[in-house]
Structure formats: structure tokens, C-alpha cells
Length: 263
Image 1: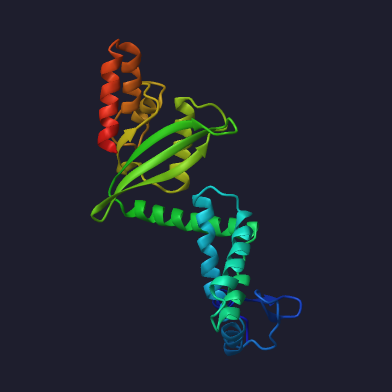
Image 2: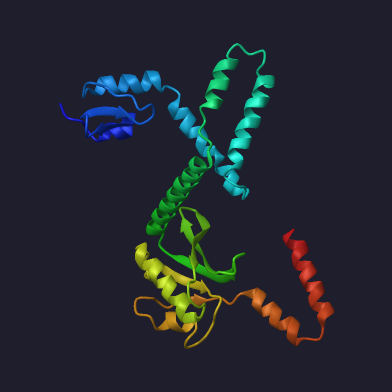
């Protein structure tokens, strides 16, 4: 009998190349025989609650959504255990509940891996949706983070069945300058690395509008990029109006009206 690699995904066993015996990745115990039934029985009996614990550990991604430190997960687990002693004091299976909670892996490294895995899955879903989409639009903006490092934000809008989806496509660190040429090169590299098709581009909202050396001018000249509609950011237009017009009160009223309608 030979060890089959699919048993690693099914039962979390790997082959120890020294002893040539299957080893459980969860409890580090060794099995003597290369039998699927033996490995399956060990996984279903000894680690019956592992699947639920693994699934529950992914819910800690909520920390990332609220921009909290990954180390906070251990504090949450401690609070969970303390409250469980009170909430389930009269339950016959209180000890079972406590055992399940104690089995949750919530270290900062575990939380980091969970968030990274979720991010990879979201990225794969987005790329699959873009491959199936007939067209898309892009919006770009360059900003500086708290470490004074320039980041290029790219949003994408595309049809998916009967809906239009809008997602953050990427956040590209600008290692050099943030001129039109630099942004254009970074965008081209990202599309090439992810096998995205420029022929699906129908419109663009750029943060730079140079006719020759700006992002717009360079994209117009690039072979393989079709003609597209360009929309200028209305916030930039508003800023120019505020600096040029003297009727500031009128502009303020207009802005208040827009904010009222949005809210």
C-alpha cells in the first residue's frame, strides 16, 4: 500500500519520510498502516469537532473589519470563557461547550493566517467574476498612508448577472514617484500579472488627466487598450470652482443640498 496525497486534504495526515508512517497534523500521532479506513476513523473519532472549530476560527476576521489588533482575539476568547461559565451554568452540556471554546485557536499568528486565507479567497472570486464579465470600468486615486508612503487605489465596476458590482481591485504601493508614467506602469504590470483583459475596459476615472504624459494620454497611446470614456472626478471640479468663483455662499448652499439628499 502507498500513502495517497489526497489523504492530507481529507484527514490531515502526512507521510513521515523517516519512519515512513502516516502522521496526524493535528495531534502528531502516528498510524501504523496505510489504510484509508484507519486514517478516516482516527479523524472522525479523535478530531470530531475539528471542522467546527476551524470554521469558527475564521469568524475572527471581524477583528480585521474593525481594524483591531490580531492579539485582541485572545482577549475575546478569555471573555467568552468567563461569560460562558455564567450563561451556561445550568446547562447539562456546559463542560462540552467550554471544551469547544478552549479548543479555538485564536493566537495572533492564527488570526493572521485566517485573514490572509479569506483575502486570497475573495481575490480568487473577484478574478473569476472579472473573467466572466463582458466589460468593466476603473477608478483610480493616489493617496499617502500614515507612514508617508504613496499608495495607488484602483476600484473596478462590472456587471454580474443582473447586478453591477463595485470592488476594490488592488492597492499598489508606489515605490518611486507618482507621475502619470509611474501609475501607468504599475497598472499595466498588475493587469499582466493577473491576466486581466484591457479590451473589456469601457470607462475610466483617473486621478491624472495629462493629454500626453499623464495617465490618460499614455493609455490612449497604448496598443491593446480600446477607446474608452473618460470621466473627470466631480470633487476636483468642485474644488476648482470654489477657488475661482466669488459666490462662495451659493456653492456652500449647493453642497449642503447635495449632502442632505445623500443622507
